[in-house]
Image (cartoon, rainbow over all chains, first blue to last red; front, side, top):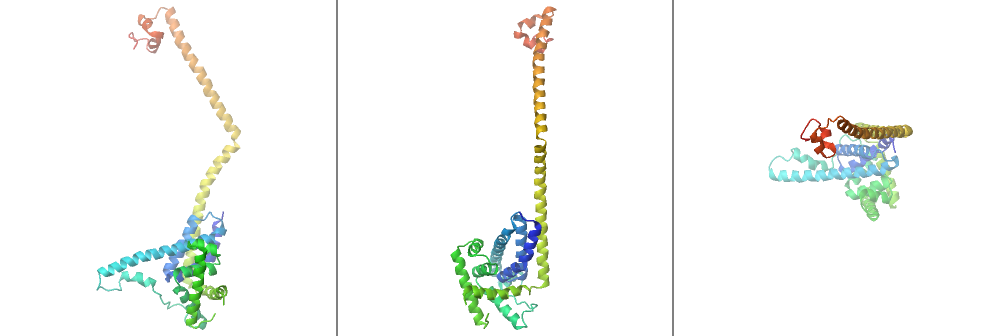
Length: 187
Length: 130
């Protein structure tokens, strides 16, 4: 049985990576922060009694589910946004209802320092490449290689077979490599 | 370049990207973490509070097992003795009441009509025996 101190230590270790992971996926800073916060609370609420060794797997599963929930909610919001804009066609499209769609666009980070130096440019392109990956490929790639989960753990978190994980990872690497090549980036 | 090598090199950059997280974001993440830990502490305290009481009760009984069993036996013994004492005495009282009435010739006529004097014993003043 773990202690709240162990939980605090674990969360401190993973919070920034979790945020980046969520941000690559939802492409929205505030949404990514909300997702990470929700995931932390869910872990604390439901799994605080579990051994600390189980935290990485549990947290990743919660994080992925929370990201999926976010997209589900977005889908519903987008449906109603489309329906409303259809009903009120001819009205100003830049109202509150337009925000949902804007959330899904790539928002340029004007205050991000990643635009000056060469390294920063490279980093921005890599980030872009990750964001452009299909959701399942990105999920598999980040879990497998960034979070260093094995194929079985990744499959358990994603709710698919190990074969699918391997396929997603392979395709993700191909897509990333192709994108970086097109931007003349060599690793 | 194989899949693993490529991933390692790419993720080296992704790792470095973590350091570019703005301080406001880091601050909010820290706040979220503290909130989660506080939540966990509350849950843990509640859990241990409940278990602690249960444990306390269990340990009290295990430490005082002999006394508990002894007290239970004394209660059972007293109850049994009480029942044994009261029941025959009540019957004896009834019989002696009838005997006294017969000897002193105080028994009214309706009492003889009452089978086993049951009604008369219940209410001796009632001539109908009801």
